[in-house]
Length: 511
Image (cartoon, rainbow, N blue to C red; front, side, top):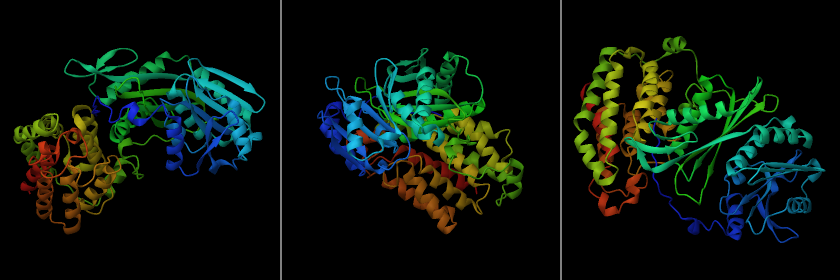
């Protein structure tokens, strides 16, 4: 499956006011109302989460840099206090101690202070553990690990100290960023081991995790792999979910028990986007592995009976010849209309939507040549595994998520329209796009909703066509079109929506 990367930042560091600590101290309490600003005796501003004032465990606190504020400092609800420091005005741990004590927090339980630093270090005094780790990625990782650790590990303070010592000694990281230059015919990615052409998220993640595991010393048994990954400079939610999927698949395929967490990093020094991964083997007594889902992109679907029982319980009958006829007609329609889809995307996009849909359709035709389409749920699941590698672009990712969810829904849904509706609901969890955002969802949503309501696919197709027509007048809010002047996109349908309509039109014409 592919990531789609734009080498721009929507806001500059100056626009975000990253170096203004007063700005952060006003903004963050608005995001989380339980966070209150406190002023230490030295004059430093410290933010405390009053919701943790009655905590029974060791208190966790962190200090970030004003120009690279780790998202974990706000996202993780188990952090009692945090602050943003500059190089000329570092925040001493004593400030956190005094502020928490004055605010009624139980500091007698112990306090951990975590901060990014050029070199790792761990200092211990009575009731206080200070941990310096290299970079914001490790700060986010260690904060997430402390939040996920077993309750017995988080108290007393000595148990926490042992886990932190283990982390500092055992954690390994890698960083991959997209470059402006191309390698071969695709984007260029600067991995830890080499600069390589980006072909798929799977290959990129395999390269990164393979490097991390090879570079680690002998680990032993009875461990859980604490894995933290961060998107750098704002990959989309969809792209981040793809990364999570590939990381989970890699570890699952190697039978490595894991607990995966995530955050976002902002690198104000470089606009390049990418991702970073931090991995630390943790004793299983400290961390419980999360069960690996059979398909991370549809992880929220909980029913996972065996293939045989699912086939026996499926409520929908599929005829191989009829399903094959429908799929072939839909794919041939997309292939035929590739030039017009490409023309539209040349005007309002990157010009590759037509090629992406055409190549995806050809891959589907090739795949079903030897497949049993009467077992459609199983076949769809296998097809998604194939398309993840061979179909790129944002539309490719959306199709894969939808089809993966549809395969799951077909096991239990009473009707095909119900299965489509369930797949749509799952897709909407992985993208912020909605009806009216000038995307393929302006075709998919009205089709699925009308089909479910009326059980009339031709009526649904007519409503979907109106949805595609509406995109000619819509302002783009997602994708590359959102960067274009509104006058440029007026009168041109969204290429993804148009391509999906041609697919549906071809499929329905075969009925």
